[in-house]
Length: 132
Image 1 (cartoon, one colour):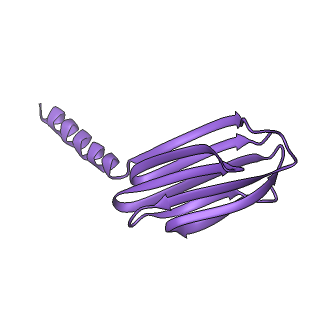
Image 2: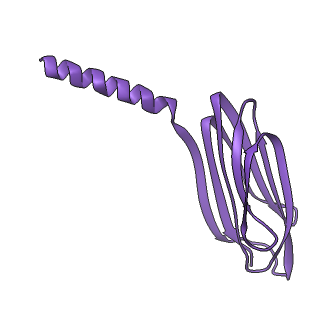
């Protein structure tokens, strides 16, 4: 009986620790997007990190490689021109000491291809697609 009580207590403690570091996430790989084929595209990455959120951001730059930024706060936007056939990805991991909100949007030539809102203490957003 004593062992059952200790197991219950241990389980309760571990589950409360896990709740403190729980991550809210959104991840999608969309494949080729539905936009007219052309030589290059204007891609706009946008993120708005709520109060007390600090984020690490990685996005596909104009050379087709990932650029990483640390400790991004508030409203962030990056505009890049990418060639046809490029694999595009935006990844963010934002953390705060209390529940907060993150808003994400990606546009290709003015057309929204992803728009999402997350809330929590740890926000993990990943979206990728291929340009035609």
